[in-house]
Length: 169
Image (cartoon, rainbow, N blue to C red; front, side):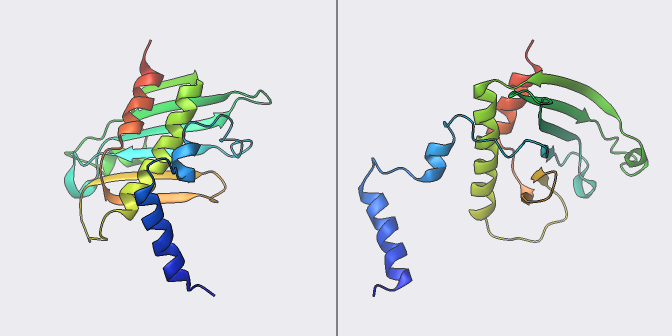
């Protein structure tokens, strides 16, 4: 019987020597219909910048949801501007300065998957350092079966690409 650590090390060494070997994550980003779980539960992607220091900053949300009984997915983008001179006074009421709803293209669906994978990679590739300010990223499915929070984090490139796709006119 081969010990588990030997097996895991063997897999990493084998992957490193074979450039044609792809992980499931690398293949899943370009696969169609991988967001089937979003039938009745929305997927909420949140990015908060660090403009106000320890109080956080402006909040961008992309909510991915099923379009009724249709097969298509919609993305609803909202941007909430925070007044850094009084960051908590504005929290009681939303100050949404941008909002747009679009049908997601296949490329948009691929970007949603890329956001999730990029956030996982960023979170697992960084030491857990206590912080009082910084960027916050999160991905949450409405029924809480998937929750990924990363703080302090960094801007996710795929989030920017999806936001730009939603806002382009």
